[in-house]
Amino acid sequence: MSRAIDKETVASLQSDDPTSVYEDISCTLCWDRGQLLEIEFLGKSHPLPPGTNFLLDGNNIAIPKAKLVQAFVTARQIFFNLAKDCPKDKLQVLGNAAAVILLMDPEHITAANSRKKILLRAGSLSPEIFKAMLRKELLFVNSFLTARLHRHTKSPTLWGHRRWVLEKCKAMGMGYDIHQDLHSIILVAAERHPRNYYAWSHLRWVIQNLCVGEKTKSEISPFIKNWCLRHPSDTSGFSFLLFCLAPLKTPENVPRSDASTFVCEEVLGLAVSFKWTFESVWVFLRTIVATELVASSQRLVFLEAINNLLTTCEGEPKARSNLQNAMQWFEENQQANGS
Image 1 (cartoon, rainbow, N blue to C red):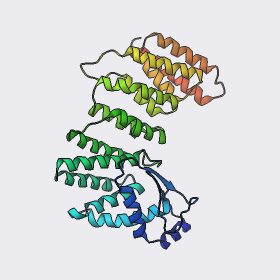
Image 2: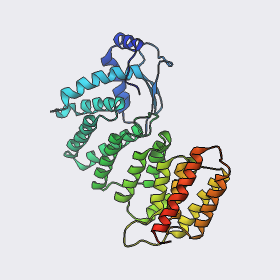
Image 3: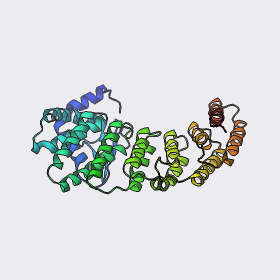
Image 4: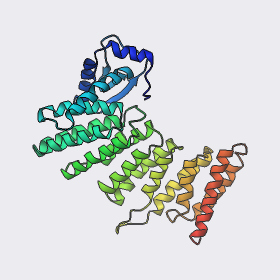
């Protein structure tokens, strides 16, 4: 969201009561619905009636940008009045202010850290209260990360906050369902912000820290593969697929050549059928074919596919470059490996 404010917006800001706007937005944003919020911003093309500060339909909330600016100014004043030494009876007020600040600026580390401190203070009360607050906080940050907001879905601060919450959940012995997380959070964020490095890195951390084991990677690989085939230009997705196919460095490793070969065949077949020349696809293919993860027969198929596609993209320099670079990288690494 642009931080520039035009004259019409300035006039609108001056005509409303900022405290009332803040109260409306913070209350609806922090109200515990027990489900994810679908958050969107409204531009000037969608004016609301006087006195209306947001639209709410079930778990869908739409907030005009001008109203959010008003709420942010008030939230910032409240936040810095309480942040340094917040009384126990004002913790909810501080948390609400931090929520509005993060909605305006997802990289506001101080606001994110204040919500951590509130949770830790709650943890001193009782384990059950702490668990309930952790669940609520996870819903809060998940709503931001899956919102139709360009900056939030790829915010390192918000993904880092989610990681911290999950670590606390693990420490409290709370259960974790990677399949639900994958489908409702990670893949949604990855789709709403293409090449979402932070979302995929977060999933990598989850596998390595919350559900370590070859079985987990094997279970989610088909879902990742299908997602990548629906988003063939997404290099971050294909990078994670390669991570899923590579064995973990643990003693219980077992060869996964059959599964990797099957995935390679499918991706390569679709790349030829649809004449995909995306760099993401061919970086994935060149890397997996150059390793021992797939059957050696795939190497010849890989090279033949590139040669065939090169004949169909004579007037496409970018496509030719992607294909030629993939072939060159493959040949160099094969030679380096003594193949």
